[in-house]
Length: 54
Ligand SMILES: [Zn+2]
Image: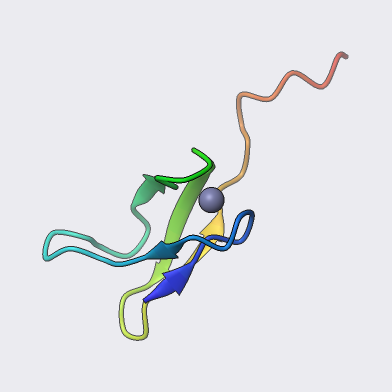
């Protein structure tokens, strides 16, 4: 089990979860990337579509 980096919600992989998969946090909606399966860890995914106001 892993925790959302943003809100601390508990996240669990299902049998189809693979490393590198993106999964939105069910609590706060933050896009999380699965960085490892065993142990299960996630990291906040890069916000590639963010508007930086260039
Ligand atoms: Zn969250």
